[in-house]
Image 1 (spheres, one colour):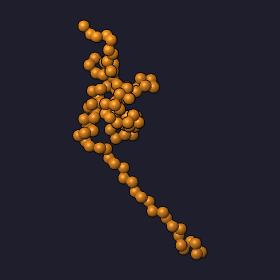
Image 2: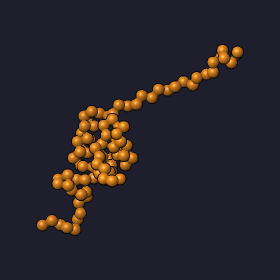
Image 3: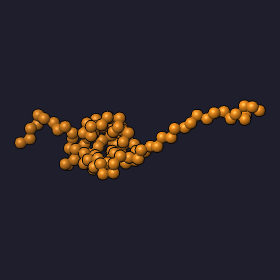
Image 4: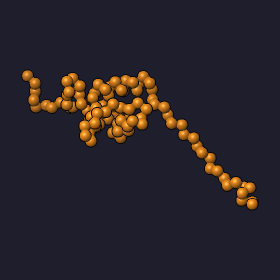
Length: 96
């Protein structure tokens, strides 16, 4: 007999847990803002997400598969920041 007094930590769909963004952040031990950032399409390898209206939901098996892929491929390409030198005014133009 199933104990009805305790609810599962996340709803189950078949054998797959459906997670909210805070639950994904807690499982991956990352900030909530990072979860939202990694779901964006501009991210190199976006976190798989399902939108239900305005709500984001994640399947636990897809999150784990994505996480394993991150471990294999390493981190995403790092942006190369180029420090621009301040341009000085053209000395010949000032003399004219």
